[in-house]
Image 1: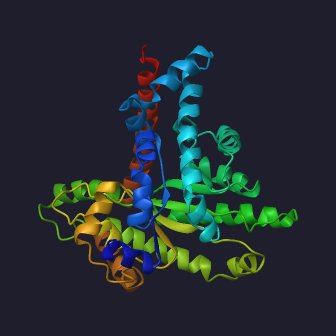
Image 2 (image 1 turned 30 degrees about the horizontal axis):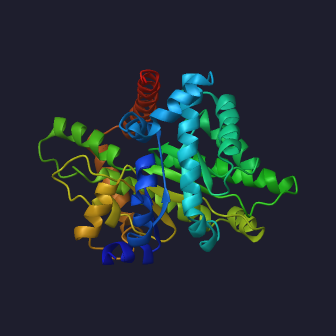
Image 3 (image 1 turned 90 degrees about the vertical axis):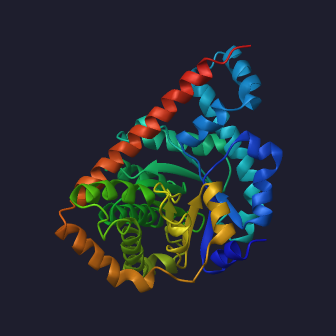
Length: 363
């Protein structure tokens, strides 16, 4: 058992694996990570499923049978992905119960082609929730402007949501507001909120990848290189604390509501000159989730040095970093707008590739 992973867990960070496949489920590798590496949840996305299904023969028999039954390519992919997610939910059910429903969660994303369609996102979120039919499921909805009312509506209907593709603090504040409005609507209708949970997935490494390019164009070896992503997440946590300490939230908490937790996603470094654990050990604070690919998990196990809370002590510095970025000519609004559109486009491409590959499966 890794001391680094144990220390991370003890510091209040829930370790979730950013990966799922039938191979992981059938080989026992996911179960082993639960037992040995403090993994208490799983996140998925279209890219993960594309890699899992396209790269394995374990799905072939099901694909051919579902095709024989007359299902469309989209319906076949939905059946394959929800089947794996259902199995993962069952595997994590003991953790879900032991953690009072906080962890033991498995996420599945609505069709990425619906990221700018509120009503269809709501409809598919409800459909996936019903199809998987497990209490520890999270429905992933992108934090686009069109996604915000979908987050509110699904929450109001008692469906736990993982809000994904968040890049800016301003959008994160809007996401928290959407969640709280959904909770408030349930309470106004006399419904329980104790079983409704949520996480807000704040993307990390993509921020540095984009801003570093812009800084390189200004000056090689710019002193702000590699500073933006962690500072952005620190400011997001400051926003989270502000909501947690608000009278609005305290009133909801008194009535049994669960606060939406911040989740750090895209935590594998893209610039190999950076320490491979930086987006984990520099983002430690109470009530956070860090979802990481197995490679990053292994790096933390190997040489990560967990120093306790590394977020709240950096809030003032994070504000200074963003002031310096603005002074250097970095237009952060431009950065996050690009990253949101690019993130949706990448997931759409992965989904389309998956449909094509499933359609190409032969006897």
